[in-house]
Image (cartoon, rainbow, N blue to C red):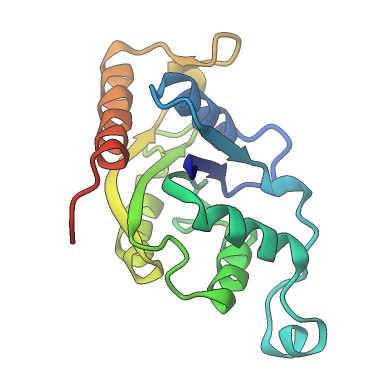
Length: 185
């Protein structure tokens, strides 16, 4: 049986708020089979054609791709660095797309982002929403949480602002519906 959902945060921060938001999504989702993949321990070089030719595709990337092929959907959280996805996350995507350009295999993806500022990473999510379909992602919804330190309780791992909590739940429900009853293409 396939893993229903693979979840990850494209961050290498030891105290990643995007990882915390991803884990809150895992706690909220009604699907039992969710695997969180922690990228922080991936020791991979920056992608370059010369590096790929010399060293090949790193084993952690091959293993991640194999996990992804078994998923029915994805929760992807990305921090925003200067309005874009972080170089760390982009590097993982660059390596994965050397195996298969459509790494998300036309499966549903929920995009998340969090930041302490008002924007909540919404600029990056907008860009990723446009880019990820080129990587085979079916974006079902996006959710950005601004004012993270005010709206997220780290101890309980929950969003404490009622309006934001409702938006978050709605986004998760969108993914659940797509995973449980995929739309025929």
